[in-house]
Length: 307
Image 1 (cartoon, helix red, strand yellow):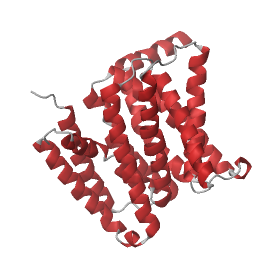
Image 2 (cartoon, rainbow, N blue to C red):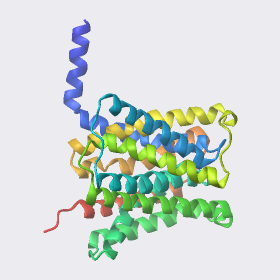
Image 3 (cartoon, rainbow, N blue to C red):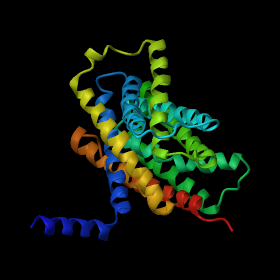
Image 4 (cartoon, one colour):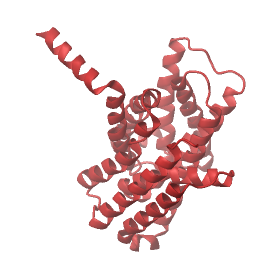
């Protein structure tokens, strides 16, 4: 009986494919991390949460590869790791964790998904022309965001909401720069080891910033709700889902592996309305659909091979 069950399970895995299963994991669980971040920052400083999350996640990665005696980076590889740790984790992850403190998890996820637009704009200022599909996609996404913000017009009068929008937008810009830098100067060694080093280095950066500004609270004063959120973000968000994400990039075409960008916000919005009671109106639903349609067009123009 046991052998039959194992054969049935392995048959299902082979039929679906591990890369597709990994993509489904990324698409769902990265959406849930917005809710975990939202819960965590209710009870502690956001940048301190990001610091602890990245320190523990980086420690797990680096500790594992130290035990395996993985070769350390050499020469210019360290420069790339330092730049990516600053762009992807100090700025992008740190600012998005801070920004979601001032808005719903669903809205934060929608704004964070706009990074392909910034890739197009950055490339434009680097001398690349904008494809018609990308331009239409940008306009459609902008229209979708306008529809979403119909329900947030009153919130724009609040300084904390304005600050949250600025933080979240800045995080998407730095993520776009990080993606372009990775594409241009990706390190040639183990990508998982590199990821762990980026997390660990970024936690040192963030700790220095938070200590210098005096925003940290004593660890004993962090409530259990935040520790549970940190644990979820470390194990699910920083370790398992990043492993699945890199695996999808290695085994699936880019057009397919990027599907998670469109599913994460939907997961965050639906679960946010169920768990936190966040507002999910018709305008938000329609605006999100329009925005994600525009992002699909932008993403497709980026992936389209040049003649």
